[in-house]
Structure formats: structure tokens, C-alpha cells
Length: 304
Ligand code: PPS
Image 1 (cartoon, protein in one colour):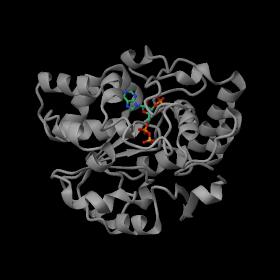
Image 2 (tube, protein in one colour):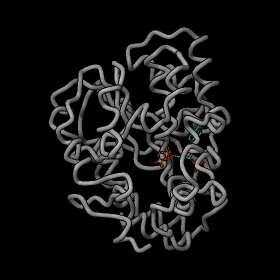
Image 3 (cartoon, rainbow, N blue to C red):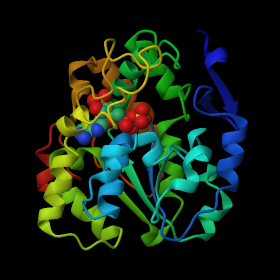
Image 4 (cartoon, rainbow, N blue to C red):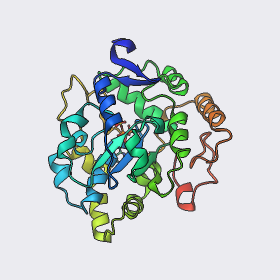
């Protein structure tokens, strides 16, 4: 199907018709945030579904019931998607939500509340690869074309939720103080218990090491891949076809190395660095493939 049949534009943001509509966007604008809400913010393919597993486990101190009985999209719904209206009244307090919205699309009630935000960042080169395969398996998304074509679409922002750099800039500039925690997909891959400790401390949960370890085991790539409430096996193959590419595809940092040429890496890094020039933050990875001096010793060992 052509892009115009699958997508629509909402104030400059390209969204899939299957999961979003004007009514769901109006519902998101009117949504009333509560002070104890926790929302994970992600650019697509940065670890959203992972956070849909982590948030209820942390908020409920390791109780497995929500993740074993409620599909991820209803358990921790997307603020902007159609499903929110169906489940909003059943969400237990404190509520967990996710969103792909750039900051300026957040509703007024978010800005006046003290709801907490966990912004999960992922190396954009791995986002491109993950998204490229996702477009092949999800029939509600357009055919990505060749990887080289898809890289250009991504860099030009002709993809869902627009440019990655704009998304990141919007949340970095939001200045939410201690309401926001920035965490990387890569640190979650490298040391999930430590990442969970940061998340739980941020959410004011004083979890024991045993509970942290239990959550880490439950949220491992393998465990989530096997959880029918999280692995999208409840969805028809006509909609998401794992034979083309599984949703839980690889779950690693650095898969881009198996996909990109040196020219493609240079094109990606030069475009992104240019767009981030003058910003008052630095990225936790270097995008040109060199070792990153900005990472902690632990992180610099990471193959990203
Ligand atoms: S979406 O469609 O935007 O909601 O996708 P999203 O959930 O943001 O990102 C999907 C990628 O996250 C990986 N993933 C994980 N990696 C490691 N460990 C765990 N537990 C985990 N859960 C999800 C998933 O495999 C996708 O990445 P790729 O690189 O394609 O494997």
C-alpha cells in the first residue's frame, strides 16, 4: 500500500492510521495526567515494549501478575494510540504509560503535573536497522525500500514521528529537572540490574536486590520473547508477521555494524552531528564508529 493510504499527518508528524486517529489524538490532548503517573518516552524502536514490561514490575515491586495477564499495549498503553480510550479506566494507580510524542505534543495536564518521565535513548544507527526490519513485518507500515533508501528517509524525517534529532532535542530542551531520567538502551543491554536500580530509585521505589534481580530475569530478551502477553503472538499474522522478521529480533547493541557501509555510517553521523550542533548536550555514543570518550569505563567497553 502507498504511504498516503497507511499514514496521515498530524501537525507535521507522520502517524500510522491503523493505531492512531484524530479522535485518539484529541483524547491524548485532553488526557489528565496524575502526579504519580510514570511515562516512558521513546523514539520508535528504542525500547518501548521493554519499558512496558519494566514499568509495571517496578511500580508493583516485582509482582508478575500484570505482565502475565495483560497484553503490553493495554498494560502500559501509548498515550497517542486508539487503545488508550478503551483501557484508561482500568489502569491501576500508579499508572504506567508510554509515548512516542516529541515534547511539544504532550497535553497541558502533563506540563502542570509532576508525572515522571523516563526517556530511553538508543543509538540511532541501531534504530534504523530495527525499524527497517519492523517495516518489513508490520503490514500497517509502508515497504521500507532498500536499506540505503530507508537511511535517507530516516535522516530526512520521512518516517513515523519525524526526525530522531528533533525528538531528542525536544525532550532535552524541555528542562523538566528531576522529573525526567535519561537512560540508554545500551546501558540496559549491558547491565540491566543497574539500569533497573536507576529506574526504581527515580520512581521512589526502594527495591531489594532480590526484587531487582527477579525483574531483570523477567525482562531479559529471552523471557520477553517467550511472554505471549508481550511478544505480539496474540496479533494476527496479517498485521505483524514474525516469519518476515520477529518483533523480538536481536535485542543487541551494535547490530548496525553488520548492515552499514563506511559511506552510510559517515552519512548518518555527519547529518546527525550537524543537526545537533550548538545543543547543550552530548550523545552517549560516537556515531562515526570511533571509541567514545564520553562513556564511562564500563560503557566504553560496550560494542556500539
Ligand atoms: S516499537 O515498535 O517502537 O514499540 O519498538 P520498541 O519496543 O521501541 O523497540 C523494539 C526493539 O527493542 C528490542 N527489545 C529488547 N532488547 C533487549 N532486551 C529486551 N528485553 C528487549 N525488548 C525489546 C527489540 O528486540 C527491538 O530491537 P531489535 O534491534 O529490532 O531487536
